[in-house]
Amino acid sequence: MKKLFTSESVTEGHPDKLCDYISDSVLDEFLKLDPNARVACETVAGKNIIFITGEISSSAEVDIEQVVRNAIKEVGFDNSETDIDYRTCRVMINISKQSPDIAIGVDKSYEDKNGENIDSEGAGDQGLMFGFAINETEDLMPMPIYLAHKLSKRLTDVRKSGEISYIRPDGKVQVTVEYDDEKPKRVDTVVVSTQHNSDSDLDVLKKDIKEKVINYVIPSNLLDENTKYYINPTGRFVIGGPLGDSGLTGRKIIVDTYGGFSRHGGGAFSGKDPSKVDRSASYMARYIAKNIVANGYASKCEIQFSYAIGVAKPVSVYVDTFGTNTIPEEEIISKVLKKFDLTPTGIIKTLDLKKPIYRKTTNYGHFGKKDLPWEQIIKF
Image 1: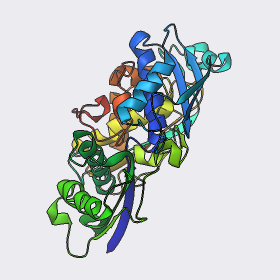
Image 2: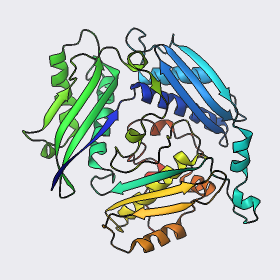
Image 3: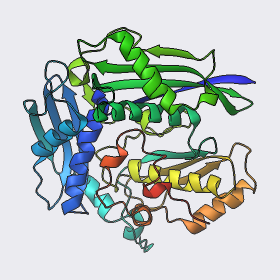
Image 4: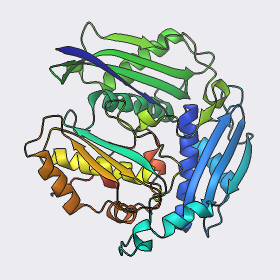
């Protein structure tokens, strides 16, 4: 049976991703100086204004405004007439400390308070998190989001290298993959929208994007005469970034995860230190799901954890291999519970999450990047 599935990705200059990058840049700067910093940093971008808010408790002193300006510069925004200018934009900062009511539950877990001698802090909030892996690609990611991320990354690469010198930082891509009997067979549709200079020739742009981005990224055996291409379908995309649309941290959670191919618990990642299980437990769930597939226990795996605020152990652990398991799912769950410490402290220790590694997670997905600790393959 044939089916179509679509995923999207965005470039570094998308206004929401700009906000994610700023929030993760602030987080990294605090973790460089204070690995135990508690950070929940939110960014709003609109026109030529950046607004930073949230809660940060740390012994470190960080020049947040300079971090913000450096992040905008790294993305490539330097023109207030078309997007935003890192040199002249207004930066507003409204940061408070973590609520003492939350800190009580995080610093000392419910189990520890009740004599269970659990050597872990409590979860920073209630919530549910999902992890997923599938053997469709070398990174064990779903094909649609895998290709979408590669396209959006390529858009940034050709811009920064000057290979396509007239495009600007903002952009979005979308890839539709045709499945036959649950296997990816071909790319049905590719959509690319990229910001460009006002004097750009749109016919040249479409030709360059097709040859230097799409054909560069997508294997030729997945493209055919029926593949459809929509390149800048509105015809013009000069105004972009926060000038074209407002941006907000945590608004691209499906781009960040599995492109809609797997479920999502709802919590965003960027700007949060690893005591927030929205982030750290999602990374752990991916780590375990990927290793279940990599170790041959299944070819497709989804995991869910749920937590209660202040409680160290997960409330529930769920594994679904969609009938692809090679050993009973009960045995897989038993292996998981024996091998992995799923308390917040155990997750942080296993994945070494107190290091300033979060800027590199922000763009082109938090999963599928070989150099991140939750992407490493182990035997268990």
